[in-house]
Image (cartoon, rainbow, N blue to C red; front, side, top):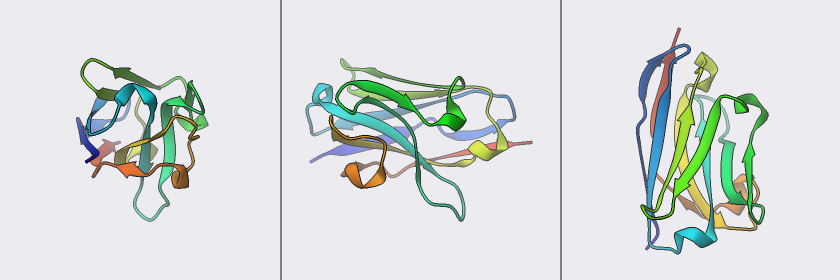
Length: 123
């Protein structure tokens, strides 16, 4: 059974830093694309970043480029999202997801999801 468990969310002030973690199990970690998505209140879920997606690339949505860094530790089966220079518009529930490595950062390509972790950026 595939399991993805996020941690590391919380309340942070504008300009602050948070590092999210996602512990994965139940699949061959090295072979899958891993991604982070977010959903703000009243908005649709959107892709933030993915690693080993689209057959081997790392991708960031424009709004987080230069501020967020995705990484993974294959030995720990864990994917991370380090978020710097946080803005109020980054406030959302952040979800970890896994997909076959051909997947790009579009929702329908990602079959496995965690339950999410809340990130709140206060101004």
